[in-house]
Length: 256
Length: 300
Picture 1 (cartoon, chains in turn red, blue):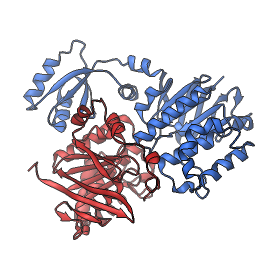
Picture 2: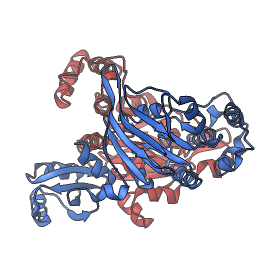
Picture 3: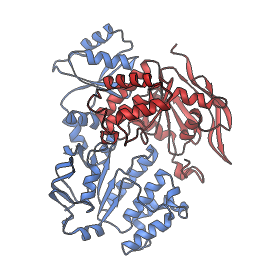
Picture 4: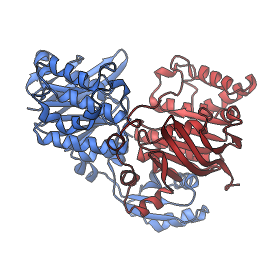
């Protein structure tokens, strides 16, 4: 079971006019794997991820995500994945409970399922005291844990995390990674996009994108050995050149 | 002279953002304020840059009091806020010109100071600031903060949202600015950047946990840390948490940082225990503490 691929990407390409943002990338991600998707600003990782979650239509190439095709069934993909970003996680003006109800509804859960899930989350995250508080009043670490759980409400096959732990205090960050390990151990695939190399160190395997291409893909241990360095940060520095200096046009511009 | 902070406290309604903060930054020092989001870093920066008044305590910048002499301070400091605060609709060059004019100077007059940095974005000088990438915005913001040749530079999370390549370049720029005699107070949530500062203050929940050089802070870590790894990270963490002698169990990238309660800890005992838990490919090796280990120990 563990070897089953839940993301299969083959020569996936995205062009914006003359500019190739993602250049024929290929890789596979297995069930229950924690996969790190790394790259500098403007390397193409956001564009690649948007194709994988069914938001952008690829220019060419192919990809299957949670056994659905990115051209034919982008909406099925959206139903079968979870997404959590550091920048946007939960509605600050809603209570914890209202957020769970809202996102449960969006993900198509029935009322009884939402009720059940709410009770389960209160129990697991010890939210008895906070469930009726506005999310905006909670510490960042709490928000992160709740929003991760909310991204898992509909039991997705894959959950996409965008810089999930940046700025979080070191102890909470570790509690968060423990949640991720547990989720992966239960068979959910974790796809982490980040340019924080300390997050990369926690992944089973990582890919590094440079100028639209995947330049490296392996376990952090093997990559460090291959480049003869001690941290993923050093691996990254050896691979990635500064986008603002080497690229004449396009990459220096925000592409979202 | 540098920066003097004495018993500064600040509350917003019920929230105590800063609790009795005291420390000095020496003249010409590169000083790091290290802590997670919500630790109080920005509040302290706003007090020191005269944008906010503390409830208690005093602070001075090169001898000027942050309350009484706020106008003098504003002329001699450069401040780069955490949030990009330049004019998005002005071009790169227009922004720089604007800040130079406000401070009664010109780009030409202080070009030497910003040359290293500005030269990298100069090819895009006619582009609007809002259209720049994160790394380029950061270089422009730094150029604008430097254009009046400040004595003290305040940088609030300058590397947040910036990739490792730009981060590295940024720290190299800071070192060069320091060599030109500018005192720098920089904040960051990234513990790995602590090692690049002369001295650091670790801050969490509005309180200073420790102040020292990065080397001294690491030296004072009270325990021996072991890097432990095995083929299943989740089961490894579960097992280590079950082990009755554990002092701390923290995932740390591909390893777990393990510390034991006992002084006469024998790693072989732990190895046996983990083998009994059906873990495979177990490795246990001594390792050096990091700033992050110390931070967690102090913040517990």
